[in-house]
Length: 150
Image (cartoon, rainbow, N blue to C red):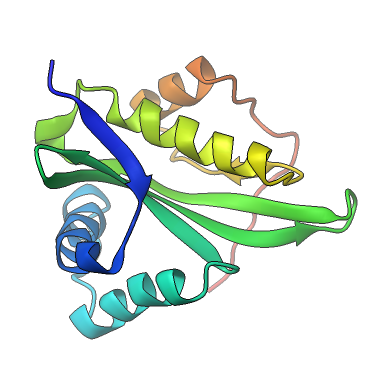
């Protein structure tokens, strides 16, 4: 089995991460292709401002095959920082190597090692593969309802 490396994204990763994130947005979520400069600026922002969030990458044989994005906020109720796992994606050709599981564990380790109150995330109601992973990792569905507005 090919070994994966899970690590914090670095500036040298921006071009490969951009392509993987575009695949995530366009192919997986069927959204319009993002503006290249804007998406690269977002990736760069996270690297320049690690207090706002960070990205981890899964690397296999020198190629980035997955990523996870954490954004940071605060919990007033627990008077601590909190994390939002906003993205967890593994390219289709790299699935089966447990990259998603390893990325999730890396995020969880990060929030626990840094004394965060919790990590939250969302997934589509019909994304049963993701739900299976999150259940396996010990995630619990929240009692809170999620609202949004555009």
